Length: 467
Image: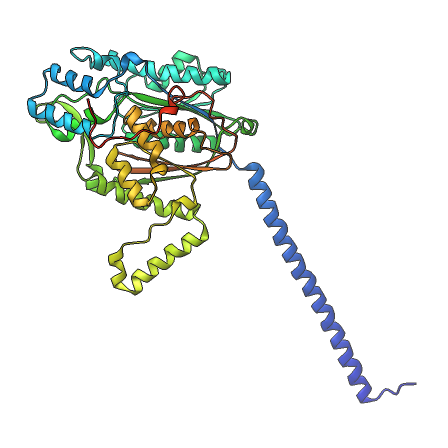
């Protein structure tokens, strides 16, 4: 029999306290395990929710316009036409000839019917004829290829910077193809060469708000009513660089369309420097002292474009670059702050070839493509699609990056899993980037705007073109 001594009572009390502490510890462990389990479960649930409920944007297909050979304009024909037009003196003819010869544009580009006429027909009716020729053709080709009923389209977005008729271009399409009465229609104007990717951005936002929808995006620029016939050199540049073209892009957020889609949109980054006067004024449509209207292209464009590109890249880099490149960029910034002499070497430019397999740079001109190639430290093959687009079709404004992507597809270079960077610049001043991931096996034998002569490219573009 154990005696009830003070010592035994203390031992019993200690054992009871230890047992109580052990039970409390076990309860705390269970609570902690539950919290961990709950956190893991919540994380998994969030991932699954985002996987199954996020609005994926698929690029089902796209079409680029190719004009009939009757509208082809060799440089010799363009210069002769400008001479016979009677609007230019010898100095402006010489200037346009020099720019055309050094532009990187070849002899197989196109201009609309009104510009081919003598004298040029720059009327509204001629402009609308050009719009119909381009947009009606590519929309019909796209619908025919995929057997699309126009009434299945939920959203239509058109963009043409310098032409904004009433009714709008979007309404023109609705009337032609018989879209539904409740279709969501939008028409963008004044957005410049970057309007194509701006339209993609708008379509993405709309598809994010409306389930199971198809969106049709149409991008073009009209030449018929915008040939400048004054004497100001900054406005004459547009006569030498811009050509006829357009693109139709079909987007979808329907899960069933993933099986037939070519690409999935991963990122879209927009940069607008319009709050700065030098950016706002570097590309402006205005009237000269004689009352002739044209688009003035400032000499400051390369500097402004470089600033816009850097701003755009800063955001894009965080989304697409591997950690190794991001760390190196961070170290470079820190080193320049700590060691002032390092600023003379310039900032570190990340290697975007580690993030992208293909580059579709806006074919705005030989100088634009060359400057971006040098800035991003790209190789000739990286900018080949853009250079050949400029050579074969000229500057088609908002649709140019789609001609470059068509080139890559026709060459059979885009493979499943590849990532494509579309980069566009425009008035304002704007720089826009779209990142697409190829999600299908693209066959190079599929007909597109390059199919008839893709085997002839690439070609060596001379510093000065013969005409």
